[in-house]
Length: 140
Image (tube, rainbow, N blue to C red; front, side, top):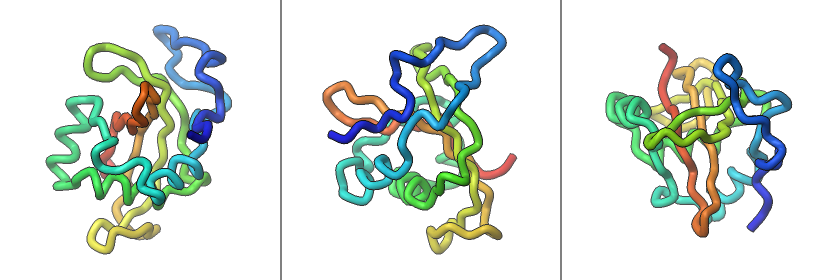
């Protein structure tokens, strides 16, 4: 499996009460993650919706995991907003990359005049590659 980490996990400073941002991001290599989606190595069964708020956002927007993977496939390095530590169900912290870009939900393509979407994700590799979806929603 290719190395998805641009910043090795062991070198990441744990967050403090005041500082969740991870300097030097992005944490993950977007092109490799996207390549795994395109190759079918990361599919809908590899998506874990890791927060209740993300689950609600997906329901409210009527997006499924295929939509999420399509959005991820449309992201570009210039869309990177920041990297930050995020708490998921069960209280565990994951390093996440945040991307923001315009997306046409009807045609499922990138579009600067489309809905501005926020996609916050992490990746685990505990025997099975998993996309940890922390947030996925339109502008608020």
